[in-house]
Image (cartoon, rainbow, N blue to C red; front, side, top):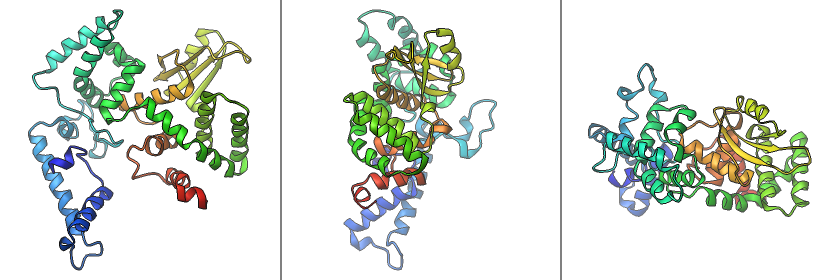
Length: 355
């Protein structure tokens, strides 16, 4: 059990199946007679042992487990058991304990120091070190209290920086964010475009327009952005929900438009024929990042912020983010919705040639 919990405290049935099958494959003498799978008993035993092990960890005060206890639900909320927070997106460090020798008081002091540190020039290394040290404190705040974004931003201004979003995502998942997202998107682009070609109907016509625009451009970032928009369309979701375009120089109009955006990206052009002047990210009606280099980069940062702030995917883009998470980023890809599963099958080598 100690080896299992290094990777996951809460396993699914398919994962127990994999472990039990691996056990009887390596040791055929352990295969159960009279069982259809030959390992049903081993699977049940593993599940029971892991549950017992979590109980011991809860008694010892392991935050990764105690956060899911009904006794620790937020004050004033009658949270049902089904809504208790658990890692569900392959977070390796979902709610880690404080570093040895640190307490809530000492870490709060570091947080207060960061408020002034972030304003100083040439102070990146100090900020980076203190953000690393306060990770568990910040993560417990995010998971347990679910603060509003504007309140959290006032408490942790250093958090809303591109390099820190990358670093925080890696602390949570042990996986790089920006480089992996862009490289995996490029890897899947050819097959996604072929997938778009085969789609018929009204959706297919919209995807043809996107494919033609890509063929006429040599701009890598434009191609990536078009593929992201095409993915939304292919999944019957509106790309305007992901990327909101403003053709105006009036900041008041832009700010007013942010009020209707819960999670999304925005671009600003001074006129229909002008170049994009600003690209940013909006969370809960507030622009938390601006002056980003491209929409694909902003998409990676938005995905990272959703993980880092433990946010739910917006309902109108749930399939798009599911495909990004489970197929492009390959995080928790064993359980997919029917729509995402169809995309994964068609993008696989076998599905690509036989579809």
